[in-house]
Length: 85
Image (cartoon, rainbow, N blue to C red; front, top):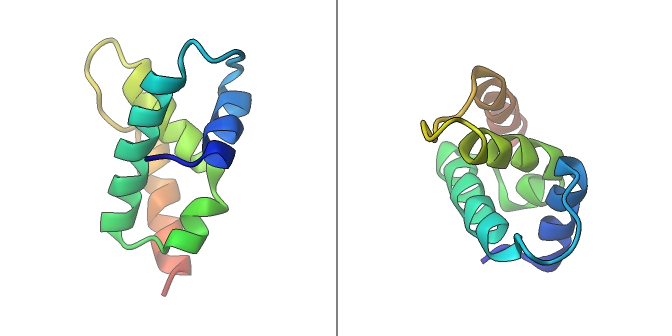
């Protein structure tokens, strides 16, 4: 489950305030960070990359039901994987 600091950072990046979307955003953060981890991004680097996580959350939240990651998000994850080695 997403930690409070990551949730707050993602909400800030997405311009979301209040707690009404916390459950939804936490679920999306979990999906995005699991994707990043399985791709090879270290846990420390994921924790430092809230705006990359926010991009991934935005992709699956606002993609007209397609729920797919954008080329930009995938490129950013690739860069982080290379930095994790």
